[in-house]
Image 1 (cartoon, rainbow over the protein chains, first blue to last red):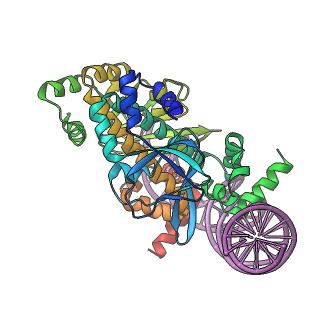
Image 2: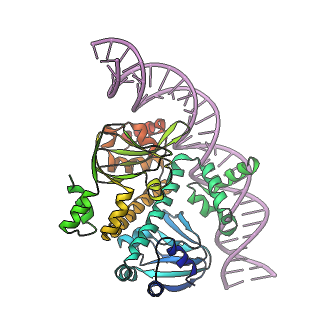
Image 3: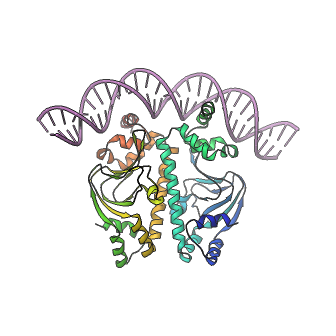
Length: 192
Length: 192
DNA sequence: GGAATCCATTAACAATTGTAAAGAAATCAA
DNA sequence: TTGATTTCTTTACAATTGTTAATGGATTCC
């Protein structure tokens, strides 16, 4: 249940058995079906989720269009972070793309943990730094790469997702339309 | 000298006078001319900089083209963060766009600070979280907005930069060519 | 199992952006 | 100040993407 979470934490801090228990007890297990909405636009995100199984996506609703901001895979923390961190209404939705097994922790529990386990500040700092680096890398791909190159890089790392989720969700994540994604895929198949 | 830095830190943690001194002493003052390169591609970024005065830009060199990844303004921490945080060769350059007054802190000094002032973990966590939120917002603009809307938003917040730095630097930051920026500006002037 | 919905692909056309080149204006260095 | 460089804009054309609509296939839901 907590194996992968401890593995992630273990990369950055060392918890004693006692601390491990306090850490574990801050989380609650949640099993949710496919297409379940965890956070709606306008709501304040009260939890963050460690994904033990399944896929979540963060998306924007822009005049009826749904634009994917991020796809969270197994063994990552997922949330509408800006809402969670700033205690402000979310400008995004957080929804499952598959049936998911999650470990949820609330904002208040998180604050308690910072007090009980000062090491948490180190852990969360490291995770925040990693997320920042990740966001920066994606951003740089929008600056440097053409949509086709962006597709190629995505397919290399996340090729399995083309079989797991609808393509139009990936298209908006790459900043293009489904039509354009289809064209690019055709080009790439003919000239790999 | 440290006024703005303390103001930033004060938003997140409260330092005693003693702690303030330890904090201040970790930094060294640096004055650099315009177009001075702080970090080169391939080097490991050993410092981060708090900008008291001036502008810095982070940029990528892609086959001879220079693409702006970020423009750092006064009273922000600037660095090639992925290199600094991961102790890995930088994939970007960090360079001044104007004469700058900087407060620099090295990686080693930073590690010392974490030990001497555990509160630093909270402070840096908060700063990392803010940076992440900022990166996410910029990224969402690439997904949601057209280049013209991205230009309009940039001009609203950073209009002064059009008078301070060459436009082609802003163009690549917006993910477009200088030619396209010029066209968009013409469109926007006629239809504000 | 059948109806309804959703989805990926294709086509045709419009709009936008990129590319290359050239000239004018501004800036910089000697 | 002068000459050289950089920078911004404009033009013309090519390439790409967006938009809209239609089709057939797959999936979902009673």
